[in-house]
Length: 128
Image 1: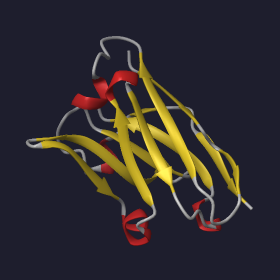
Image 2 (image 1 turned 30 degrees about the vertical axis):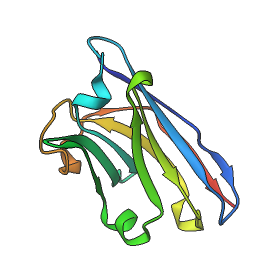
Image 3 (image 1 turned 180 degrees about the vertical axis):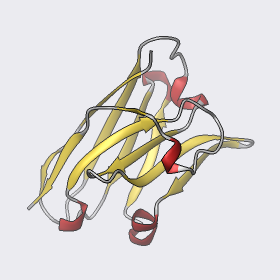
């Protein structure tokens, strides 16, 4: 059974940077972040922020409307740590909220944010 644990949230001043982490563990999770859809969401409404997934020529990324518009977020992974990250730069008050890591358990249709069904507990970001 896949488990996701987020960390890295906290209080950050507007204009600062923050990197969130999501560690995948449990079950058959070797190389999980490399082989399956992984994504970050924000808020109670689970707005899709960014997705990372395997592509034909290597990893692919996809950003939700708000993240794409800002260009300030970057999703990336560390295979050796089975961890996915969300780097947030030039943080703004509207970036505040609970951030969740999630996986759909599939290596395809990763841009479908509504397909993600395994979630971490979330990590809170506060912007001052």
